[in-house]
Length: 598
Image 1 (tube, rainbow, N blue to C red):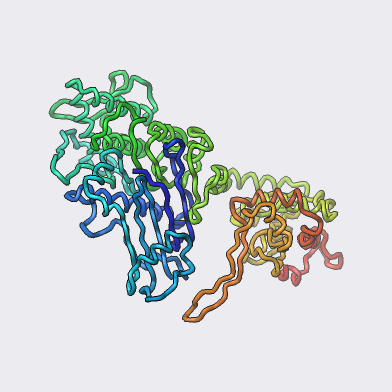
Image 2: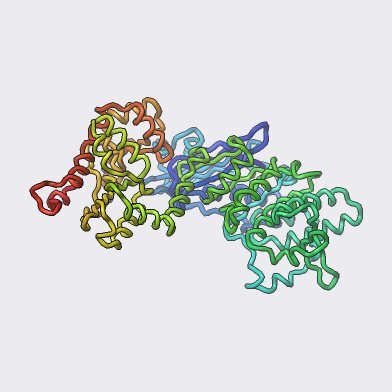
């Protein structure tokens, strides 16, 4: 039961999102959703999961996972994006199945036009379907099928969701885990009933009991059970990173625990004693095997298993090796399973790239839902920043300052340095750059840490001047501490980009860049919004697309003219003011009146 497409409009933090999930020769590619906390990753997953749970309730009405007539995901006006009036969502599954919903902040009035916020035919058609004097609409066309048709879908697919709070209690916290003996599964063969569950919180006990049944059936020469057991062994061998001599062990009748053996010796006495990361991986992939086995579809190897598996925060509790190597390899074992996952781990994304290839999976950044290249994943930069904020980075900065032979100018980022160097060439300011050393600081937070760090050094430990040059949007004050200076780049209020060094480029220059590549700049058009009952105009807003910041810099440095870089002259004036102070001031002091204006 593959997901094919999802559309979200004005849903929580999401403005407009439309993702068509990719396939290659009818084989689904893994789908990875990234973005900061609060960007809407879990909201997106909830729509897919809600459709799966409702479909299962139709196929097996005697074992619903939510109360009859209820939904897994709330449908409420509180989820409408701030300053908007209506939300819409639609998830398309295979076989032309879909679920859509719409919620308005106000009841629909007779004769009212389709709201301008609703772009696309699906959203506009849903508006037309919503009844007058109602403010919500919901449709799952699975309801238009009978239970046998829906049950047929579930009999050919594994359907699983792993929420972020899915983990087992560790054995040291709950000794009952160590007493959880394997036992035969109690499967009821009753019409409308199923032992399968979409939502999986702590499935290790169920997986252990199912494995016990599989091993028992093997004794009766059940070939299908043998195939299942061999796939399960492939999974556990990858999880524990051991050789082909690894197998499962079962305790005696009065102590029937599941263990993991290597060369017939105990490697793990009880699977409940595995680490949380190993348990997470084992649970995930044994659950896929168990669910597909329970659906009744025949299979001989992992490549025969199909379905959809949704995992929120798939990298939780996983060691770096498990994120980078083991998890991607396990996913590749199941090529017909559609994995839809969220992550904050750059190692996991890099591991997917190494295992599946650049085109073997799809990476989307939320809240926009835009496809991105693995190298554009901002968590790489964040991880690098965290690394640089270690004591080694602090020590490197301290050493550089103490041993400097020239004045040092710290800028916020690497693109700032590139822009400044190119501006110096075009504006004839290269001599001033020859007199200084330029370093990037990995953002505003990096500059703040440097300022705090060098502030603890005595004056004789900083022989040369040190300048920290913040971007124009920095809200702190300019300061002097002996020969240490904190400044910010002057802001050009008439230019369209308000933040960052790109503020120094005029609208004409940026338009020229956008003619080459429109993706350089994101533009929010001028619009009307209601504030306290009054309509006000929100001005057009330009921002550099965070994934194109380096590409824009490279293009401007290669193609920009002296006129394009003319406003950088103010940066050189500012540096010259510090490095070549007014000779009328004694002892190299700086005019504090000019400091405040800077």
